[in-house]
Length: 60
Image (cartoon, rainbow, N blue to C red):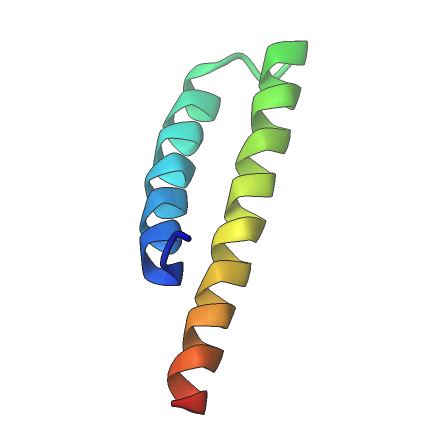
């Protein structure tokens, strides 16, 4: 099973890549909308992983 901090690191890297790609695409295209949706999903998952890691640390 993947450690929460490893998951958080992976999601952080993915968030950065998707953010850069979305900035380079034209905002009027469907590709941009799909990529923006993916970026938001990764960002939300990163935030959840961060919350889980903090809760785990507080419980220990």
